[in-house]
Length: 294
Image (tube, rainbow, N blue to C red):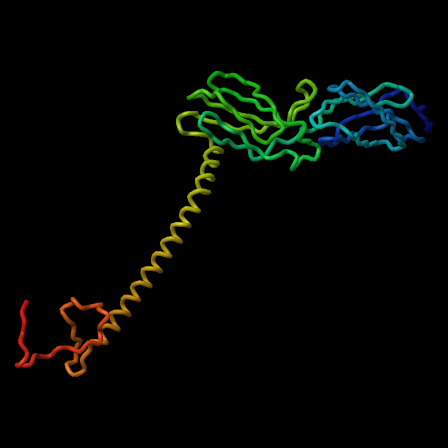
């Protein structure tokens, strides 16, 4: 013997197993199950999204006959905080959860350049990799002094650099740069952090050293190249002069070569280089010509 019992669906029950499947910067995928198994008709759900930062509400309607329902909440803000409520359209019991969207990324290539009485922080524009970031939002800069154990807010800027002055000798500092926080500092970007170590001792952070090494290399390499070019030109000029002198000497020696004696005949050297090279050589004096000695 057996008996078949059909349970009457209770539309006052809340959706089951509400949870987040995936959360991005501007969206969140949520999933839940129907109040009872195998619904025999379309069920209308109300999805309420409360922005805990802006203090605003939005309601979306979702219709489905499936036992498991998946829904994507769009147009959220990076780094936002939301309270999500799901219930049947007849305002039955509700299921709720909280969602925090992914904040904006940290700026890339943060580095320090040391000047005489101040330092400059440089970083890449966040708009290069974040389509949701507008440069008009700007960045904010914080500094942590490890010796004094104090964190200070230095200010904000819409540029990709920031000047920091009045640093104390012997203190170690950590600087952070992030997308400017909105709505009372509740929606911020991820911070990029850089250590500036032992100010005034000539030992900076690794980023500073790499920055200095790059700057020095940019100066030294062209100078070395110019030196090598100058040395090469000097060697060429010396070689050409040497060949010219050698050719001149060879021509001079050949012009004074005596095939009868088998050797070259040179004068005392006083008349070398005289233009009158074709004058006949005096070989002797006649007896009837008086000799005058000055």
